[in-house]
Amino acid sequence: MNTTATATAAGTAARATQAKGRNVVVVGTQWGDEGKGKLVDWLTESAQGVVRFHGGHNAGHTLVINGVRTALHLVPSGIMRAGVKCYIGNGVVVSVAKLIEEVAGLEAAGVKVRERLRVSEACPLILPPHAYLDVMRELAREKSGSEKIGTTGRGIGPAYEDKVARRALRVQDLLHPDRFARKLKELLGLYNLLLTELLHSAETPVPENLQPYVKNGELQFEPIYEEAMRHAEWLRPMIADVSVELNEAHLKGENLLFEGAQGTLLDVDHGTYPFVTSSNCVAGNAAAGAGVGPQLLHYVLGITKAYCTRVGSGPFPTELEWEKPGTPGYHMSTVGAEKGVTTGRSRRCGWFDAALLKRSAQVNGLTGLCITKLDVLDGLDKLQLCVGYELDGRRIDILPLGADDIAECKPIYETIDGWSESTVGVTEYDKLPANARHYLERIEAITGVPVAIISTSPDRDHTILRHKPFEYGLSV
Image (cartoon, rainbow, N blue to C red; front, side):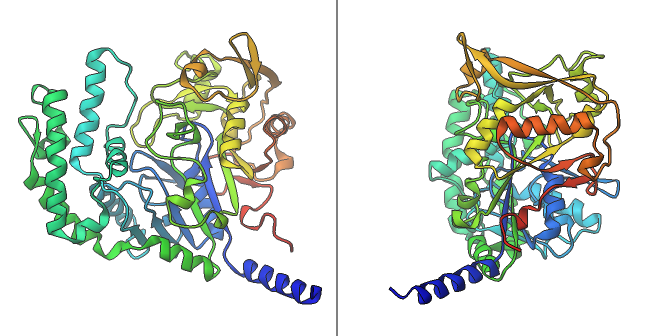
């Protein structure tokens, strides 16, 4: 065996690997709303491309740049950085109507979008039938006395159902009018049967935004088809084979940032099922939802609030009485401005759940943590940190998988002293209050994941960096 030749070949391969781009995946580790948008925008300083790989316009990311607040729903958060390419991968379900609306708002504010945005031709479309079915199902659950799932009513679930049932209309179908018309007629036939026979849609008032598409409880072909064809012309210049473009960008040495939506505990497989979203929110789906190999996912950054929140229905072990003035939960709700970006719904608030985070760390393979909204805890005298649960008379230290079991979990808390000093705008770790540092270090110790980044306000620059995700693990 020629060891010299082997070593030379290995060195050449290593140098070639280092010449390629480095890629980071950003995921939420709780129930969404963790502040991913700010971190994606901030990390994009080191990236040339940002990729959305799942979800739809039910997700919302808020960015605050120089005091100006911007809400994004489908467009990747990297769009706020000039020159950065943005990609919507095949794992995203796309409402072109909402995309047009969002792009128009950004461009009116002076952000160049269409020349930098690429949309996968394999994305399933969200059409008026999906939103109508979504709304009617939730109404039916409410009328029957069943617990509502808590969907946004935007058609995300039905669109994903059509995808796995192999009847979805995809972005590529927009480019073939006859094919699109045939598939749409087949879809409407099925939906109208469900709506009229099972959900009795003719007896229920149609939401105002869907009235142009519905008559006597039935979806109408012509207005839906004609609108889709108008959307096709607007979208055409941005349609691309995103998988090819991402792999080419990587080989050119471009860094890519994969932007997750929602949160791990809303994942359809690993979340608090059935109170979940309809896609996979975990880091592994960045590969499938964008069309890259898993070996290209070099670092997984988990975003977590310094406390917990949840929108909509479903179990929440550490939930507090967040609507009562004078309580820690009310403090979190008001100081943290806990309203959903997309829906405006109030978020339920509770103590930080480290046992929940252990589950997220496990299913995502987290490399590091980013703690957001640390400043919201300023002024609380005592903090409670959930380190496990009591379930059926025994202690467990990781969140169970079943929603029924989670609902029965009684949190086990560790009490930690709070701090009175302000952390707003702090950008150096050593300048945080001693108790704030202790709180963060307990989270590290319990979860086994290092805290890489700390956000001390919504502003882009109010961030503490402990190590750089795009450079982590590389030899200098």
